[in-house]
Image (cartoon, rainbow, N blue to C red; front, side, top):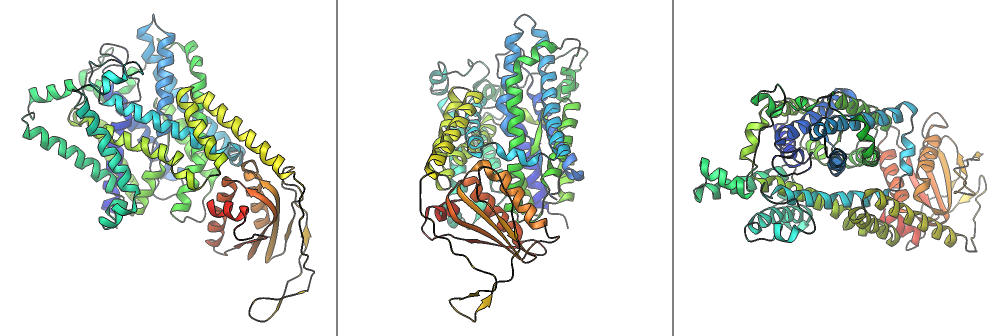
Length: 591
């Protein structure tokens, strides 16, 4: 039986995302300039990327039954910077700017697709884990700030100057614009607070935690706008023009390209391509932004896949398969001339919790295709505050996830790294910000290595084969014979050993276990579980000589414990050598 709630939810999320984020694919500009009059083409680019992603993932590109794909939200600032860079490099060839930007967007999709496909072909998915998660968290927080700035631009009327630090005060806090600002920021903050605080969930009987809460909230915002518009007598042609001139509605201008009819111009973004005018020599100027975009996309995928699997209790998933499916999806997007795409964790989670599966996802795809052709007719009637509210909400959520939520689960040094990365990416640029965050990670690793080198007394207890083990209650039992096998994790994990039988496997870690060891630990655990032909009943992790565990390692162990217990032949992860109240205990509890 089809889930109508899931179909409605998926369609609404795609439509709202297309309006809020699709409009910002091209940089904002004054009327008559290069990127003016491209609102519907930008939305069409977004929707086509969503269609290709959804089609590929639903037809086997992903092993999740109800995954939803769309343009990757985190790449939006990079796309705009790519376009701005090309525009600056071609001051005297304005007619070549747009074709070159379109070609650069397609090249970006092809590059990301090729990288993901290469990772799949060479089975390099574990190497992605080497990128510090705290730095990525900081980058995502900075992207949240960028989305809030873009939301501010959405509500500015066409006659307003470009938003900069110099013009922000006059543009945003003028008497005419303050109502727009309040109607955008206020609902977004309330949506974020109400969806996070348990108090609202209790008062509303769990309504704020329902999957349909966010899209219905956005529709209520739009409905209130039109009720107020009708009451004040603006629900007529002249009134709508007045609202559009003040920034309450989108000003839709038709782009008239060569040999292009007015209707075709509304959604046919392919007409923007003109390979005779593409300045291929200029595209390398945007290499840094393209590389950052590919890096963000590559790192984001395994995080989204792992988070979705754990959140929905999916015990078995194949990361390599996801890399291959997303690689194909982005290669197809590049061939279609549109922007990169990725599975969307939040949308997929809500969709699957609402009962969405393959059939529902395909119906959402059909509705999205219909939106592709009629978006130009709907756009003039969508309030700017609706799109800005959703964009503000997404930006606030990304920033809160990076800085607020992480306070409870990161070490103080890790949290400072996140904060420094957010500040660096916002004020210095993404690349310098990543460099700053990575430098702090190296400093922390060095500091913890010095801390770990302190002389300390460690008392070992050896349990010989066949020795009686006294329990607090119950009869005594014997430890089965254990065959000892040496297994070297890495040079950073000295004195590491693994012992295994068909029923018990023992793995020992020492010292400070940092995030750089995540791929090695993951590989070692897989080798242990597969070394005897079948998974052992018990996997014992000895942490007797461990002094600290970084957050990423603690989360890996938590994820593995949940995954192992859900297998057909479950394996129980037992942690020993741990004292309640110790620093290592706190590290594991935090992760």
